[in-house]
Amino acid sequence: MEKGKYSEELNVAVRVVHMACSMCEKVQRQLLSTNPDQVKSKDDDSLVTVADWSVQATVSWMLCKAFDSQKISIVAEEDIQTLSKSESKSLLAMVVSAVNACLAEAPRFGLQGPEKTLDASQILEAISKCSSTGGRLGRHWVLDPVDGTLGFVRGDQYAVALAMIDDGEVVIGVLGCPNYPVKDDGLNKYSQQNVVMSRISSGEVGCVMYTSKGSRKAWMQPLIRSDKRFEWPNSAKLIQVSSIDDPALATLCEPVEKSNSDHSFAAGVANTVGLRKKPLRVYSMVKYAAIARGEAEIYMRFARSGYKEKIWDHAAGVLLVQEAGGMVTDAGGRPLDFSKGIYLEGLDRGIIACSGFKLHQKIIAAVYASWESSNL
Ligand SMILES: Nc1ncnc2c1ncn2[C@@H]1O[C@H](COP(=O)(O)OS(=O)(=O)O)[C@@H](OP(=O)(O)O)[C@H]1O
Ligand SMILES: [Mg+2]
Image 1 (cartoon, rainbow, N blue to C red):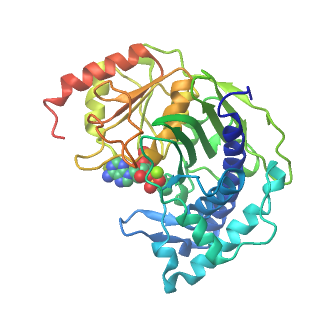
Image 2: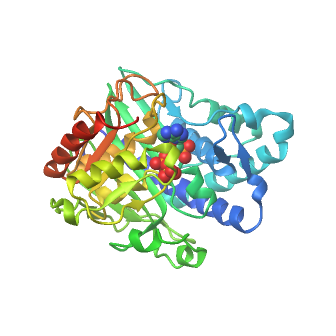
């Protein structure tokens, strides 16, 4: 990694995300094979698993250890409400066990874990340490411990997303994608079906992508498995957006769940612009990864009116696409504003991520043209 203003933070963040991915794989495998009880219903009806809390506790603990734990600000998705309830005792025990197993592996990733295993109260404290609401000034870590929870519980794509914001700008983006095929053009193939566990253990899938602002470079490392040690740069490869700028050849990425984005509006825009290829429906921020790595060219997201996009669902992915050579704005063509707390306040209609300027311009123009006649 080149020395830069944030190189120390990036170095730690990449290693911590590798650790988290390694834990997620184990939990996902266990979840799919034996223990459906690990899936709980949150108040908002989304799904949350042992992995969400365990990743949040682990990342929080490791960041506090590496940096100034008194001053650190972490914004993350999970709280301890459900986990603290008396009926959640066995769930909490699973989290405690997963976190300690993961932290014990820290030296393998070149980091220092705790001297003693953590107890439940220390783990709850680490989770609730992430209750910052971000803001315009200073540094804020932003974490989505398991983005695409639905993909996770279905044995499909999901991501561990860690970013850092400094004075309102995303300056570090790290995206761990444990089920993302390592070889080019694999996502299309694997998205046709759930990722089967044999492929994971054969090492065909799983990577961490990372970048820092202004580097104009984005990197991808394969996940470390079994007893292997993480040695920097860990076979890092540069990734880049696709050079396709002809809409007829471009691939559109969209969320799987229709409730997360208006598919028919996106389809109308795609048609206006002249997209011809079948859209790639992928869970989680892996959509941003697909653009950053050149496997798709366009990602459109139009949440239903009233839904406010959260910064942890976008920060890491947006920076990856930008530094890999792409463009991300709202549907009015303005930059996304990560300085206003946990929401992307002021977002104009939706989010448009493209591999290049030409496609981006065409999409924005088509959104304007289609908007009047839409039912959003
Ligand atoms: N109604 C609505 N509209 C827009 N977005 C919503 C909505 N509800 C939830 N969310 C957030 O969407 C995150 C999942 O987005 P994805 O793009 O991964 O969706 S999908 O799984 O591909 O369908 C999901 O992130 P995770 O909770 O981390 O999975 C939510 O933060
Ligand atoms: Mg999310």
